[in-house]
Image 1 (cartoon, helix red, strand yellow):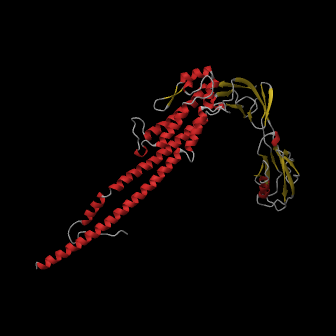
Image 2: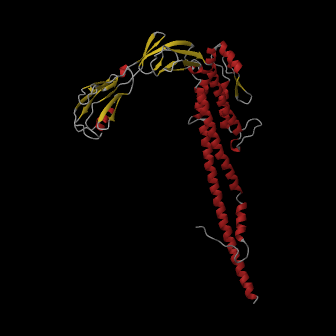
Image 3: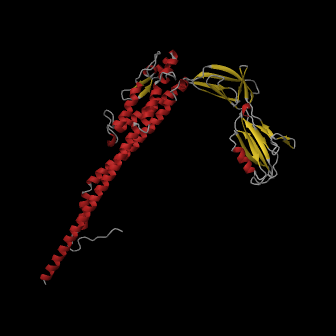
Length: 442
């Protein structure tokens, strides 16, 4: 509990007010340091925001750093039985597709097990042999095993199978299912007299489905797939099968999607400009003053802009177009980008492969601008990159300022204690003198 002091009792002078005024007048250094501390805290947030914007820029670049991603195509289906999607590896075309069979996974039930609780002993013994995908396992069942124990053994076998239970209101069954669809992933069960997965009960088959492949006909050619996602049959197109086609074939069309490509480029331009504008706002640029004095002319932030700007002007490949500017991505005087749509359209019409190479290279030896910028942003965001280094520097400054404030406060505390001691002594002296004068005047 803080001590309560009453200064000036003997002298009649408000010494506490004097002490408070002197201490307040001496707080100037602390106030200046606290201002610096506030600016530094704000600088940490600003640098972190630059890092976040760089991450978003990297995401926009990753969407353009391969030839498949640069080439933009869209696919459509006129039948709900088939959903379609296309990547940049697609090519324009039209296909008639019939779905004759869907892929399925194995699923079977045991006969009723005669227990009404899953933790009840089954009183059954034997060996349950399972085989799937070229791998097999023998599950040893003991009389004391409960349904829970059997399920645990099956699920721990390392096979791509799963066991669970089904309760019909009076007793349990064991369900066994394959985790993957396709003929090669069908589950073979033997030595299963204990559970009778392969049999029937009251005329109802225990096996509900086998692992089987999907089958489609594309322009009359048969294609099989172990899943209902058919890939590779049509270049760059995935067919997602949801049902059999019952009223004739589905028509699948693949078309160039210039707008989709433009959208990716606009995302890139917006993400890049967000980084540049944030750096300019925080560190200052030209006549624009820094919004935070702690980051005015900051070398780390300027390094971010310089590193990115350096890549933008590089020449790539040996095609008709070799620079970003030649395909319509132009650099403004303030370091931001703009997309010249008419120039981009003209470049795409004249040599789309060259446009792709400027951004994504050839996916082998030649790196495109997007590849180079991905590398730059990765370096800037790394644990040893400019962003983290600047945050570490600001953290060190925060600690230094905190230490300085503590030292200044300690100095003020000592000053206040010394002043109070001096004024107390003065107050006592004045009180003694007043008492003596009062005695002499009697």
